[in-house]
Length: 120
Image 1 (cartoon, one colour):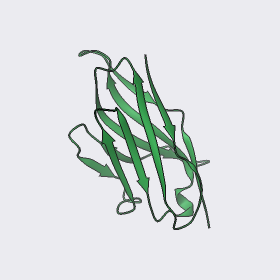
Image 2: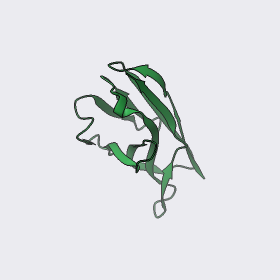
Image 3: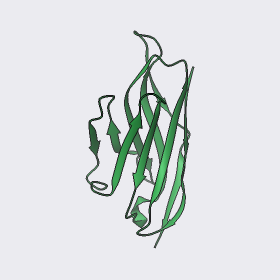
Image 4: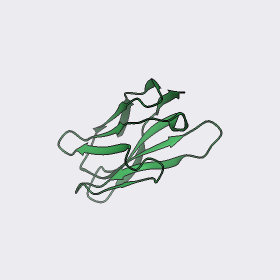
C-alpha cells in the first residue's frame, strides 16, 4: 500500500558531508512522525533523528550538531543532511514513517536502506 524509498548514500571521507533522501508513495492519507535509523554491521539498529509533522525534531546525542533532519509535507519526503561525518557514522541508514492510509489505519513503514561509508 505504501512505500518508502531512500537514496543518497555512498562513500565519503571523514569530515565530509552527505544528504540522504526518502520519499513516501502509495495510498497516503497523512504522515505523522518520520525518522532515520541506522544499523552498523554487528550492532543494533538505532534511532538517529526524528521529525513530526509540525516540524519538531529530536536527535541522538552522537549526531547532535552534525546532522539535520527536514521534511516536506506536501511532497511526503524526509531528508537527512549529514556533516562532519566520522568513521563511526558508517552504517546502513533506514527511513521510517508512521503513515496513515486511512483516518483509522496507521502503518509503521520502513525503507530498504541506503549504505553510508565514511573512510578515515
